[in-house]
Image (spheres, rainbow, N blue to C red):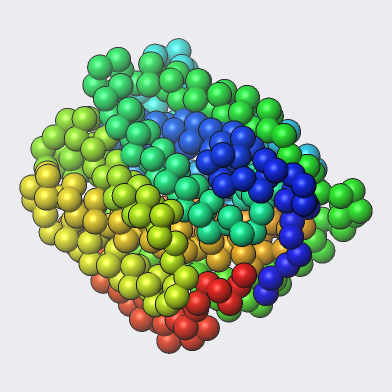
Length: 421
Protein backbone atom coordinates (compact mmCIF):
# COMPACT_ATOMS: atom_id res chain seq x y z
CA UNK A 1 0.00 0.00 0.00
CA UNK A 2 3.02 2.28 -0.02
CA UNK A 3 3.73 4.97 -2.60
CA UNK A 4 6.89 6.61 -3.92
CA UNK A 5 8.58 9.25 -1.85
CA UNK A 6 6.52 12.45 -2.07
CA UNK A 7 7.98 15.15 -4.33
CA UNK A 8 8.33 17.59 -1.46
CA UNK A 9 10.83 15.23 0.13
CA UNK A 10 13.26 15.07 -2.77
CA UNK A 11 16.85 14.06 -1.96
CA UNK A 12 19.06 16.99 -1.11
CA UNK A 13 16.31 19.04 0.49
CA UNK A 14 17.84 19.17 3.98
CA UNK A 15 15.04 21.16 5.59
CA UNK A 16 12.36 18.77 4.34
CA UNK A 17 14.32 15.76 5.60
CA UNK A 18 14.80 17.34 9.04
CA UNK A 19 12.76 16.00 11.98
CA UNK A 20 9.33 17.68 12.11
CA UNK A 21 10.10 20.22 14.83
CA UNK A 22 13.23 21.38 12.98
CA UNK A 23 11.32 21.74 9.73
CA UNK A 24 10.28 25.36 9.14
CA UNK A 25 7.49 24.37 6.80
CA UNK A 26 6.05 21.96 9.37
CA UNK A 27 6.18 24.63 12.08
CA UNK A 28 4.36 27.07 9.80
CA UNK A 29 1.74 24.43 9.07
CA UNK A 30 1.24 23.89 12.80
CA UNK A 31 0.71 27.64 13.29
CA UNK A 32 -1.97 27.57 10.60
CA UNK A 33 -3.59 24.58 12.27
CA UNK A 34 -3.67 25.81 15.85
CA UNK A 35 -4.88 29.33 14.97
CA UNK A 36 -7.70 28.03 12.80
CA UNK A 37 -8.70 25.60 15.56
CA UNK A 38 -8.57 28.31 18.23
CA UNK A 39 -10.84 30.49 16.12
CA UNK A 40 -13.32 27.71 15.53
CA UNK A 41 -13.35 26.48 19.14
CA UNK A 42 -13.79 29.94 20.64
CA UNK A 43 -16.76 30.46 18.35
CA UNK A 44 -18.17 27.01 19.20
CA UNK A 45 -18.13 27.53 22.97
CA UNK A 46 -19.46 31.09 22.67
CA UNK A 47 -22.27 30.12 20.30
CA UNK A 48 -23.34 27.32 22.65
CA UNK A 49 -23.54 29.73 25.57
CA UNK A 50 -25.22 32.38 23.41
CA UNK A 51 -27.93 30.05 22.09
CA UNK A 52 -28.69 28.41 25.43
CA UNK A 53 -28.79 31.83 27.09
CA UNK A 54 -31.48 32.88 24.61
CA UNK A 55 -33.52 29.65 24.50
CA UNK A 56 -32.82 27.44 27.56
CA UNK A 57 -33.52 24.49 25.26
CA UNK A 58 -30.92 21.69 24.72
CA UNK A 59 -32.55 20.83 21.40
CA UNK A 60 -31.58 24.28 20.13
CA UNK A 61 -27.96 23.38 20.90
CA UNK A 62 -28.40 20.37 18.63
CA UNK A 63 -29.65 22.64 15.86
CA UNK A 64 -26.33 24.53 16.01
CA UNK A 65 -24.61 21.33 14.88
CA UNK A 66 -27.17 20.74 12.15
CA UNK A 67 -26.81 24.31 10.87
CA UNK A 68 -23.08 23.70 10.42
CA UNK A 69 -23.10 20.17 9.06
CA UNK A 70 -25.57 20.68 6.20
CA UNK A 71 -23.42 23.20 4.29
CA UNK A 72 -20.34 21.17 5.23
CA UNK A 73 -21.80 18.11 3.54
CA UNK A 74 -22.65 20.11 0.43
CA UNK A 75 -19.24 21.76 0.08
CA UNK A 76 -16.81 19.04 1.27
CA UNK A 77 -16.67 16.85 -1.90
CA UNK A 78 -15.97 19.90 -4.08
CA UNK A 79 -13.48 21.26 -1.52
CA UNK A 80 -11.44 18.07 -1.84
CA UNK A 81 -11.45 18.31 -5.62
CA UNK A 82 -10.31 21.95 -5.50
CA UNK A 83 -7.53 21.16 -3.03
CA UNK A 84 -6.21 18.49 -5.42
CA UNK A 85 -6.42 20.78 -8.46
CA UNK A 86 -5.70 24.35 -7.30
CA UNK A 87 -2.93 26.04 -5.26
CA UNK A 88 -3.42 24.73 -1.75
CA UNK A 89 -1.93 27.64 0.15
CA UNK A 90 -4.23 30.16 -1.53
CA UNK A 91 -7.28 27.99 -0.86
CA UNK A 92 -6.25 27.75 2.79
CA UNK A 93 -5.89 31.52 3.00
CA UNK A 94 -9.35 32.11 1.50
CA UNK A 95 -10.89 29.54 3.86
CA UNK A 96 -9.32 31.26 6.89
CA UNK A 97 -10.60 34.64 5.74
CA UNK A 98 -14.07 33.09 5.49
CA UNK A 99 -13.57 31.66 8.97
CA UNK A 100 -12.99 35.21 10.23
CA UNK A 101 -16.26 36.47 8.76
CA UNK A 102 -18.45 34.26 10.98
CA UNK A 103 -17.29 35.61 14.39
CA UNK A 104 -17.48 39.17 13.06
CA UNK A 105 -21.14 38.58 12.15
CA UNK A 106 -21.78 36.94 15.50
CA UNK A 107 -20.11 39.84 17.32
CA UNK A 108 -22.51 42.22 15.59
CA UNK A 109 -25.46 40.01 16.61
CA UNK A 110 -24.29 39.81 20.23
CA UNK A 111 -23.81 43.59 20.34
CA UNK A 112 -27.38 44.12 19.13
CA UNK A 113 -26.42 45.61 15.76
CA UNK A 114 -28.01 42.73 13.79
CA UNK A 115 -31.31 41.03 14.71
CA UNK A 116 -30.75 41.21 18.47
CA UNK A 117 -32.53 38.54 20.51
CA UNK A 118 -33.16 36.22 17.56
CA UNK A 119 -31.57 32.80 17.10
CA UNK A 120 -31.87 32.35 13.32
CA UNK A 121 -29.07 34.85 12.44
CA UNK A 122 -26.73 32.85 14.70
CA UNK A 123 -27.56 29.68 12.79
CA UNK A 124 -27.00 31.50 9.50
CA UNK A 125 -23.54 32.62 10.59
CA UNK A 126 -22.72 29.09 11.78
CA UNK A 127 -23.74 27.76 8.36
CA UNK A 128 -21.00 29.90 6.80
CA UNK A 129 -18.49 28.30 9.17
CA UNK A 130 -19.60 24.87 7.97
CA UNK A 131 -18.96 25.80 4.35
CA UNK A 132 -15.46 27.26 4.84
CA UNK A 133 -14.41 24.60 7.36
CA UNK A 134 -14.79 21.99 4.61
CA UNK A 135 -11.51 23.34 3.16
CA UNK A 136 -9.42 23.47 6.35
CA UNK A 137 -8.81 19.75 6.85
CA UNK A 138 -8.06 18.88 3.20
CA UNK A 139 -5.65 21.82 2.94
CA UNK A 140 -3.87 20.72 6.11
CA UNK A 141 -3.58 17.05 5.09
CA UNK A 142 -2.40 17.90 1.58
CA UNK A 143 0.26 20.34 2.83
CA UNK A 144 1.32 17.91 5.57
CA UNK A 145 2.49 15.45 2.91
CA UNK A 146 4.38 18.24 1.08
CA UNK A 147 6.45 19.38 4.07
CA UNK A 148 7.37 15.95 5.51
CA UNK A 149 8.84 12.75 4.02
CA UNK A 150 7.00 9.47 4.67
CA UNK A 151 9.54 8.35 7.25
CA UNK A 152 8.36 11.20 9.51
CA UNK A 153 4.61 10.76 8.93
CA UNK A 154 4.00 8.86 12.18
CA UNK A 155 5.84 11.33 14.43
CA UNK A 156 4.41 14.24 12.44
CA UNK A 157 0.87 12.90 12.89
CA UNK A 158 1.45 12.64 16.65
CA UNK A 159 2.76 16.21 16.82
CA UNK A 160 -0.11 17.39 14.65
CA UNK A 161 -2.51 15.69 17.05
CA UNK A 162 -0.86 17.45 19.99
CA UNK A 163 -1.31 20.81 18.27
CA UNK A 164 -4.89 19.96 17.33
CA UNK A 165 -5.80 18.87 20.84
CA UNK A 166 -3.94 21.80 22.38
CA UNK A 167 -6.21 24.04 20.34
CA UNK A 168 -9.20 22.14 21.70
CA UNK A 169 -7.92 22.75 25.24
CA UNK A 170 -6.92 26.39 24.90
CA UNK A 171 -9.79 27.50 22.65
CA UNK A 172 -12.70 26.57 24.95
CA UNK A 173 -10.77 27.76 28.01
CA UNK A 174 -10.17 31.16 26.38
CA UNK A 175 -13.76 31.29 25.18
CA UNK A 176 -15.28 30.49 28.57
CA UNK A 177 -12.99 32.94 30.37
CA UNK A 178 -13.58 35.72 27.82
CA UNK A 179 -17.37 35.33 27.99
CA UNK A 180 -17.28 35.83 31.76
CA UNK A 181 -14.76 38.69 31.70
CA UNK A 182 -15.35 40.64 28.47
CA UNK A 183 -18.67 39.42 27.07
CA UNK A 184 -19.69 37.61 23.92
CA UNK A 185 -18.88 40.35 21.38
CA UNK A 186 -15.24 40.66 22.49
CA UNK A 187 -14.89 36.87 22.50
CA UNK A 188 -16.15 36.65 18.92
CA UNK A 189 -13.75 39.43 17.87
CA UNK A 190 -10.82 37.50 19.34
CA UNK A 191 -11.83 34.45 17.31
CA UNK A 192 -11.74 36.54 14.14
CA UNK A 193 -8.20 37.65 15.00
CA UNK A 194 -6.98 34.04 15.28
CA UNK A 195 -8.50 33.24 11.89
CA UNK A 196 -6.59 36.12 10.29
CA UNK A 197 -3.31 34.89 11.81
CA UNK A 198 -4.03 31.43 10.36
CA UNK A 199 -4.56 32.98 6.92
CA UNK A 200 -1.18 34.69 7.10
CA UNK A 201 0.57 31.51 8.27
CA UNK A 202 -0.70 29.29 5.46
CA UNK A 203 -0.01 31.77 2.66
CA UNK A 204 3.61 32.15 3.83
CA UNK A 205 4.39 28.42 3.65
CA UNK A 206 7.13 27.43 1.21
CA UNK A 207 6.05 24.15 -0.37
CA UNK A 208 5.95 22.70 -3.86
CA UNK A 209 2.55 22.30 -5.52
CA UNK A 210 1.41 19.16 -7.40
CA UNK A 211 2.42 18.90 -11.08
CA UNK A 212 0.03 20.50 -13.54
CA UNK A 213 -0.62 17.21 -15.35
CA UNK A 214 -2.56 16.02 -12.30
CA UNK A 215 -5.03 18.86 -12.76
CA UNK A 216 -7.01 17.45 -15.71
CA UNK A 217 -9.73 15.10 -14.43
CA UNK A 218 -13.42 16.08 -14.73
CA UNK A 219 -14.80 17.14 -11.36
CA UNK A 220 -17.42 14.44 -10.74
CA UNK A 221 -15.21 11.65 -12.09
CA UNK A 222 -12.40 12.87 -9.86
CA UNK A 223 -14.63 12.95 -6.76
CA UNK A 224 -15.90 9.45 -7.56
CA UNK A 225 -12.31 8.22 -7.88
CA UNK A 226 -11.56 9.37 -4.34
CA UNK A 227 -14.74 7.73 -3.01
CA UNK A 228 -13.91 4.41 -4.71
CA UNK A 229 -10.45 4.46 -3.17
CA UNK A 230 -11.78 4.93 0.37
CA UNK A 231 -14.66 2.45 0.12
CA UNK A 232 -12.36 -0.14 -1.44
CA UNK A 233 -9.77 0.09 1.36
CA UNK A 234 -11.03 -1.97 4.32
CA UNK A 235 -8.49 -0.65 6.82
CA UNK A 236 -9.03 3.02 5.97
CA UNK A 237 -12.81 2.66 5.71
CA UNK A 238 -12.99 0.74 8.98
CA UNK A 239 -10.95 3.35 10.85
CA UNK A 240 -13.05 6.21 9.51
CA UNK A 241 -16.37 4.47 10.20
CA UNK A 242 -15.30 3.52 13.73
CA UNK A 243 -14.39 7.09 14.59
CA UNK A 244 -17.46 8.56 12.90
CA UNK A 245 -20.04 6.45 14.72
CA UNK A 246 -18.22 6.72 18.05
CA UNK A 247 -18.28 10.52 17.85
CA UNK A 248 -21.83 10.53 16.46
CA UNK A 249 -23.32 8.56 19.36
CA UNK A 250 -20.86 9.64 22.05
CA UNK A 251 -21.12 13.40 21.42
CA UNK A 252 -21.89 14.31 25.04
CA UNK A 253 -19.75 17.46 24.99
CA UNK A 254 -22.30 19.32 22.86
CA UNK A 255 -24.70 19.15 25.83
CA UNK A 256 -22.14 20.70 28.19
CA UNK A 257 -23.98 24.07 28.46
CA UNK A 258 -27.13 22.25 29.60
CA UNK A 259 -25.18 20.05 32.06
CA UNK A 260 -23.46 23.13 33.47
CA UNK A 261 -26.72 24.96 34.12
CA UNK A 262 -29.11 22.14 34.99
CA UNK A 263 -27.00 19.47 36.74
CA UNK A 264 -23.55 20.76 37.70
CA UNK A 265 -24.58 24.39 38.47
CA UNK A 266 -21.46 26.18 37.26
CA UNK A 267 -20.83 29.37 35.29
CA UNK A 268 -19.26 29.95 31.85
CA UNK A 269 -15.79 29.25 33.26
CA UNK A 270 -16.97 25.72 34.07
CA UNK A 271 -18.19 25.33 30.51
CA UNK A 272 -14.72 26.19 29.24
CA UNK A 273 -13.19 23.60 31.59
CA UNK A 274 -15.57 20.85 30.44
CA UNK A 275 -15.01 21.69 26.77
CA UNK A 276 -11.24 21.69 27.29
CA UNK A 277 -10.99 18.50 29.40
CA UNK A 278 -11.20 15.93 26.56
CA UNK A 279 -8.58 17.80 24.56
CA UNK A 280 -6.25 18.03 27.57
CA UNK A 281 -6.37 14.26 27.89
CA UNK A 282 -5.65 13.89 24.19
CA UNK A 283 -2.63 16.22 24.48
CA UNK A 284 -1.14 14.01 27.20
CA UNK A 285 -1.57 10.93 25.01
CA UNK A 286 -0.27 12.77 21.94
CA UNK A 287 2.96 13.71 23.73
CA UNK A 288 3.46 10.07 24.74
CA UNK A 289 2.76 8.74 21.23
CA UNK A 290 5.08 11.32 19.64
CA UNK A 291 7.91 9.84 21.71
CA UNK A 292 6.79 6.21 21.53
CA UNK A 293 4.92 5.76 18.20
CA UNK A 294 2.61 2.78 17.92
CA UNK A 295 3.43 0.18 15.28
CA UNK A 296 2.43 -3.31 16.40
CA UNK A 297 -1.18 -4.27 17.25
CA UNK A 298 -2.35 -0.82 16.11
CA UNK A 299 -5.80 -2.15 15.13
CA UNK A 300 -6.44 -3.73 18.53
CA UNK A 301 -5.25 -0.60 20.32
CA UNK A 302 -7.59 1.51 18.17
CA UNK A 303 -10.62 -0.66 18.96
CA UNK A 304 -9.75 -0.70 22.67
CA UNK A 305 -9.36 3.09 22.76
CA UNK A 306 -12.79 3.70 21.23
CA UNK A 307 -14.37 1.20 23.66
CA UNK A 308 -12.74 3.13 26.52
CA UNK A 309 -14.16 6.34 25.08
CA UNK A 310 -17.68 4.89 25.25
CA UNK A 311 -17.24 3.84 28.90
CA UNK A 312 -16.03 7.34 29.81
CA UNK A 313 -19.08 8.92 28.18
CA UNK A 314 -21.32 6.69 30.30
CA UNK A 315 -19.41 7.81 33.40
CA UNK A 316 -19.82 11.47 32.45
CA UNK A 317 -23.56 11.05 31.95
CA UNK A 318 -24.01 9.50 35.41
CA UNK A 319 -21.84 12.04 37.26
CA UNK A 320 -23.44 14.84 39.29
CA UNK A 321 -20.16 16.42 40.51
CA UNK A 322 -18.40 19.02 38.37
CA UNK A 323 -14.82 17.85 38.85
CA UNK A 324 -15.75 14.18 38.48
CA UNK A 325 -17.48 15.05 35.22
CA UNK A 326 -14.36 16.89 34.08
CA UNK A 327 -12.24 13.84 35.02
CA UNK A 328 -14.44 11.51 32.93
CA UNK A 329 -14.11 13.87 29.98
CA UNK A 330 -10.33 14.02 30.51
CA UNK A 331 -10.16 10.20 30.32
CA UNK A 332 -12.43 10.19 27.26
CA UNK A 333 -9.99 12.58 25.60
CA UNK A 334 -7.07 10.26 26.34
CA UNK A 335 -8.89 7.42 24.61
CA UNK A 336 -9.91 9.66 21.73
CA UNK A 337 -6.32 10.91 21.40
CA UNK A 338 -5.12 7.38 20.65
CA UNK A 339 -7.86 7.05 18.03
CA UNK A 340 -7.01 10.39 16.40
CA UNK A 341 -3.28 9.64 16.09
CA UNK A 342 -3.84 6.16 14.66
CA UNK A 343 -6.53 7.31 12.22
CA UNK A 344 -4.38 10.24 11.05
CA UNK A 345 -1.38 7.97 10.54
CA UNK A 346 -3.44 5.44 8.58
CA UNK A 347 -4.88 8.24 6.44
CA UNK A 348 -1.45 9.67 5.59
CA UNK A 349 0.25 6.33 4.91
CA UNK A 350 -2.56 4.81 2.84
CA UNK A 351 -3.38 7.78 0.58
CA UNK A 352 -1.56 8.55 -2.71
CA UNK A 353 -0.30 12.14 -2.86
CA UNK A 354 -2.42 13.17 -5.85
CA UNK A 355 -5.64 12.11 -4.03
CA UNK A 356 -5.00 13.65 -0.61
CA UNK A 357 -7.52 16.46 -0.99
CA UNK A 358 -10.37 14.19 -2.08
CA UNK A 359 -9.63 11.45 0.45
CA UNK A 360 -9.27 14.06 3.19
CA UNK A 361 -12.65 15.52 2.26
CA UNK A 362 -14.22 12.08 2.55
CA UNK A 363 -12.46 11.75 5.90
CA UNK A 364 -14.03 15.09 6.81
CA UNK A 365 -17.48 13.81 5.85
CA UNK A 366 -16.92 10.85 8.15
CA UNK A 367 -15.20 12.63 11.03
CA UNK A 368 -15.78 16.38 10.81
CA UNK A 369 -19.50 16.07 10.17
CA UNK A 370 -19.94 13.47 12.91
CA UNK A 371 -19.30 16.11 15.58
CA UNK A 372 -22.15 18.27 14.32
CA UNK A 373 -24.46 15.33 13.60
CA UNK A 374 -23.58 14.03 17.05
CA UNK A 375 -24.59 17.38 18.52
CA UNK A 376 -27.93 17.21 16.71
CA UNK A 377 -28.45 13.59 17.80
CA UNK A 378 -27.58 14.40 21.42
CA UNK A 379 -29.84 17.44 21.50
CA UNK A 380 -32.74 15.51 19.97
CA UNK A 381 -32.28 12.57 22.36
CA UNK A 382 -32.04 14.95 25.33
CA UNK A 383 -35.40 16.44 24.39
CA UNK A 384 -36.96 12.97 23.98
CA UNK A 385 -35.57 11.10 26.99
CA UNK A 386 -33.70 13.68 29.09
CA UNK A 387 -30.10 14.87 29.43
CA UNK A 388 -28.61 12.01 31.43
CA UNK A 389 -30.32 9.10 29.59
CA UNK A 390 -29.31 10.61 26.23
CA UNK A 391 -25.62 10.60 27.16
CA UNK A 392 -25.66 7.15 28.79
CA UNK A 393 -27.46 5.54 25.84
CA UNK A 394 -24.93 7.14 23.47
CA UNK A 395 -22.06 5.58 25.42
CA UNK A 396 -23.58 2.10 25.19
CA UNK A 397 -24.21 2.52 21.47
CA UNK A 398 -20.53 3.42 21.04
CA UNK A 399 -19.57 0.08 22.64
CA UNK A 400 -21.84 -1.65 20.12
CA UNK A 401 -20.10 0.20 17.28
CA UNK A 402 -16.71 -1.11 18.45
CA UNK A 403 -17.96 -4.70 18.54
CA UNK A 404 -19.50 -4.39 15.06
CA UNK A 405 -16.35 -2.87 13.56
CA UNK A 406 -14.13 -5.57 15.06
CA UNK A 407 -16.41 -8.18 13.45
CA UNK A 408 -16.85 -6.54 10.04
CA UNK A 409 -13.28 -5.25 9.49
CA UNK A 410 -10.84 -8.07 10.35
CA UNK A 411 -7.97 -6.37 8.47
CA UNK A 412 -8.30 -3.35 10.75
CA UNK A 413 -8.47 -5.58 13.82
CA UNK A 414 -5.20 -7.26 12.81
CA UNK A 415 -3.48 -4.06 11.61
CA UNK A 416 0.23 -3.51 12.09
CA UNK A 417 1.23 -0.03 10.86
CA UNK A 418 4.35 -1.46 9.25
CA UNK A 419 2.04 -3.02 6.65
CA UNK A 420 1.33 0.46 5.25
CA UNK A 421 4.92 1.81 5.18
